[in-house]
Amino acid sequence: MTRRPLLCPSANADGPEAAVIGVVLGSADEPRVRPLERPVPVTDEILNSTAPLPPTRVLRIAAVCQQHECRHFSDGQCNFAAKVVRLLPEVTDTLPPCKVRSRCRWFAQEGPSACLRCPQVVTQAVNPSPPMALAANPLVPVPPAQPEEPTDHET
Image (cartoon, rainbow, N blue to C red; front, side, top):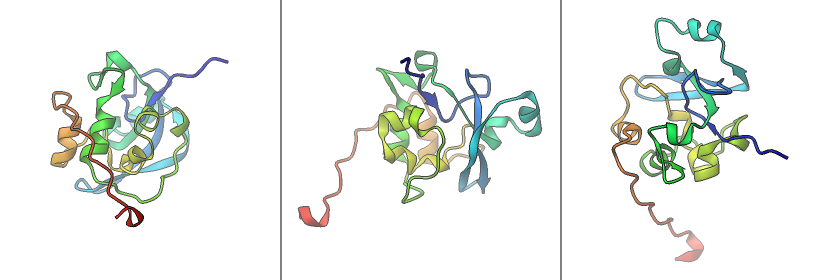
């Protein structure tokens, strides 16, 4: 059985297997992606529907991870996903619904921690928060992982 390639959940509309997976709602200061019930293949009609805004400012699009063709990928990992987990706060305490999780690069690499932060990611944010701007900058190195907080039974 052939394994299907992992998907980037914050891709551009021209990537292989590109599909809309969510719509950006909320405010410019606190955007939140509302997932669609099912991914919708990207079409010219969908892309044109966001005009005059770029589609990636209004929609979350998943497409096949481009790995070494992507500026956020090195040493076999998505540095953006790693920075999202290390720099951004959780915005939900439960895993949000997601129809691409089984093929998601971020989930495969970072686990549920990525999912708890995912709803705040806007692919082409207008005025990103300082932590989001750091995460999105491919020149910023991935910070070291923080040790887990001890639970009550470990203290």
